[in-house]
Each structure stands twice: as C-alpha cells, then as structure tokens.
Image 1 (tube, rainbow, N blue to C red):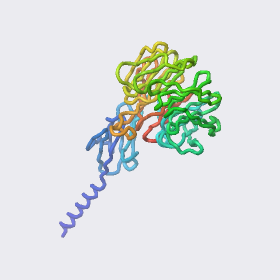
Image 2: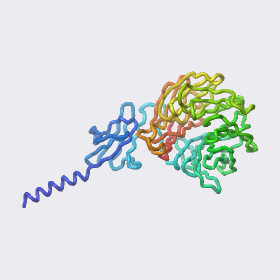
Image 3: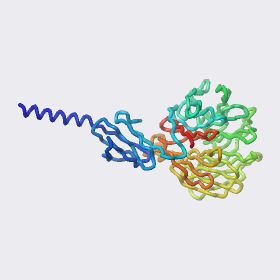
Image 4: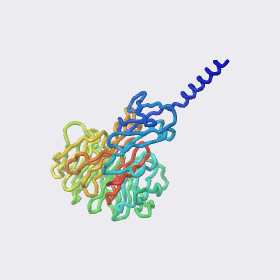
Amino acid sequence: MKKLICFSLILSIFIFQLSAQITFTLKSAPANLDVYYNNVLIRPVSSANGHRSYRIAGHGMLRFSADGYTSIEHRSNLLPVRNGIVGIKLENENGIASLLREFPTGIMPKSAYFSPDGRRLFVPLLGQHGIDVFWRSRDNLIFEKRLNVPGSRAAGFVEALCDERRRELWVSNMEENKVHIYDLDQLTYKTSLNTGGVFPKVIAQSPNGGITVVSNWKSMDISVFDSDSKALLRRIPVGGTPRGMAFSPDGNLLYTAIYDEPLVVVVNMEQNRIVSRFRLYSGAGAARHIIYSDGKLYVSDMLRGTVNILDAPTGALLRSRRIGLNINTIVLSPDERYVFASSRGTNNPEDYTRPGPDFGAVYILNADDLSLAERIWGRNQPTGLAISPDGRHMVFTDFLDNNLQLYRLN
C-alpha cells in the first residue's frame, strides 16, 4: 500500500511538471539572437520558416540578447504574442535612432506624413476607412482623431500631401479613384476630387504650388490639378505604372518612378509629354519612390532592393546599393545628410498581405555615397516612413501589424 501511494505521488509530480511546461514560437530580429531562461542559454526544439520553437520548464524570466544590441527581458507569462507568435526585436546599443514608443493604428497603415510645422502626424489606412491623426508632444505621440469622408465607408487610403500655402491635407483613395481634401488646421473635410484615373497613389506639388499631380497606378497616367480651383486640367500618360514623383526646382520637369521596370520617365509639364527615360540598369526592376535634391535623384527599386542616385540632368547612375528586401519608402533627412529607407522584408510565398518569415527594417544611409550608417529592426512589413521637419523624430509603420514606431534621432 505504501509503495502504491509513493508511486502515485511520483506520478502526480511528473504529470504536474509536464503540465507546467511552456512551449512558444519565436520570430525575432536579429533572427539569430540568444534566448536565456532563468539566466541559462536554451536551444530551440525546432525551427521552420524563420520561426524557432522553445520549450521551458515553467514560469520564469526570459532574456533575449545579441551582440551590439540592448537585451530585453520578459516574464514567460507576459511574452508579447500576436497571432500565436512571440515577436521580439532588439534595439541597437549605440545608434543614431532610439526607440521611444510603439502605438496601435488602424488596419494596414500605408504611409506617414508630418504636418509642415511637425505638430501632427497623418497615417492613411489602406485596410480601413480613414486617416489616423496623432499629435506630437515632445518625445511622444498622442492619438487625436480619425479623419473620414462623409457618406463613404471605403477603405484604400494610400498617400498624402500637406499643402502649406492653402493649409490643406490631400489624401489619395485608390478604392474610390479620388483625392480627399481636409483643412490642415481644423481637420475638417472640405471636398473630394475625381482623378479621372484608376488607383491614385502618390501626390506631389510643383515648387510654386500652382499645380498638384497624382499618379494613377492602373490607368498608367498622371492627373494634373489646379491647386487653387481644384479643377482637373489634364491627364498625362506615362507608358507604365507610375508611383513616386518629384519636380525639378523650376517645376518644368516631373520625374516619375515607373514600377514595371527600373525606369524614371521625365515629363515636360509645359509640353505634357515624356522627354527622357532614365533606365537605372539593365534587366528587371521596380522603381518606386523618388526624391529630388541638389541636382540628384534618389530612387528606390522594390524588386532589386536597391537605393540609387542618378544625375538629374542626364540620368547617369552615380551610385547603387542593395540594402534589403522589398525596399518601399525613402525619405531624406531635413539636413540632407541621410537617406532613410524602409524594407518590408521577405514576402510570404503565398500572399504578401500575410506575415513573411522575417521582420523588415529601416536603413539609414549616408546620402553622399549610400553607405550604411545604421539598420533598425521593424516588425511585419515596415512601410510608411517619415522624418519630422526639425529632424528630431522618425516614425515608421508596420503595415501588417497595425503598428506605428516612434524614434528619437540622436
């Protein structure tokens, strides 16, 4: 009888120990970081599709570490879990940018734009009706409101432009083939403009503010509006899928990135026609965003994962650097010292709107030669990207996580 009781007690303890085990699946950046459980290095029990699975004996403290990064700790019962996956990203120990906070957003935050005075941040939502507005206060962002369009529930908000002269916010909506306009100060809805094209994306304005242009993805043309009257003046075909646009300083030329190939077409705005084609290199490519600065064009190529510098007058390729997968947005710092580029990471092989095997990143490049100054890890598909006008803050959106990250630039 005593032996039976003793055996039952041992069996009960064994069953309790099994039931106390915790298994979790980890997706991390960097991918090869070390995991410590109660200060003991542990190894994954399995690994597949960029994820590693770990099994620990019970509740305790987990530490995630890698050389050159600041370690973070979580209690095993308080791990950050999203869709059954523990997501961990580490921050650089001594970097140009320091993480301040992360914020939830609406569904699929596609882009991000600071107001000209830097006091507000606008985040158009591709997967939800509206634009999230945040108030910038010192080293923080405070959610203010979500802008909508009266009488509409359409999603599909893509890009924005702040017209400082007229105190207006223009936002493209590809589901309705319209541009919606709001009062930049009162955040009140003003009007909507039909672009005449299909799937409007990027909005740009001439240096003197006289015209505002919108690139239409599916109709492969550019809508030209009178900025004051809001009249649609004309549409200019560009012979491919237009995305990013940038004006020359005199406003006579519009440089347009063509997403079908590694190509920039130069449109003469007085003649309403293409006058030059700048091919970045031979072979396939997908030119996406474009910046004009001091006689140079900075162009991202999503397919090849490159950032490129072209001579604006001739189109000669001055620099090209492959920095990461699926390069999306590029922005120039206010002092023009750095180019910031968001990399969405590896696409899910079945559907790019589902998380892929790794986290994306934001790269900080020296503007003169595109050498790497710093890499900052994001989460699932860093996409929207903006630098505050005073150069103090950087934000980027994690497109598939409905997330916004705020960094202080040191």
